[in-house]
Length: 182
Image (cartoon, rainbow, N blue to C red; front, side, top):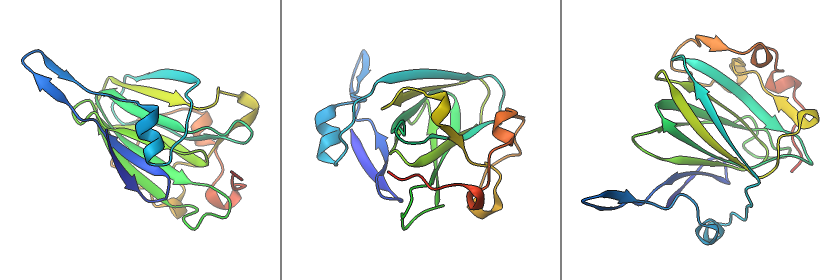
């Protein structure tokens, strides 16, 4: 795996290293030792799959509050998305900073998201499937959200969303959010 550090600190775009032959290829998508070499000590306790039928579906921006705040490893296994994370860590020099990464079935990249970030994405193709690894189990009492359309975040969503859940239309703006103490 090739770890590409992104701003803010702790965020990584991870590319796989394919070993190819006439049969196809083999690539590692997780190795605790390789993650530890870049300072990531994580145990995955939950894996989720998400399917989005409609092009331009928007999901997010979601997070969990402590003590259930979780790191994520996200991969798009079918289709193309614009993945977006926002730093909401209390005291962070990059608080409110949004980072965007395109993930697709073709580039096979993954995004490592530390605890303390709000996460969401927009599908750029129909029939998108995502795979999420979580370092903490889902906890409804600890779930939180951030308004995807907050002008203060200046997220460059490529298209007006075609589908957004009712839940995702009611999240607070950054100015109304209590930062996450990690």
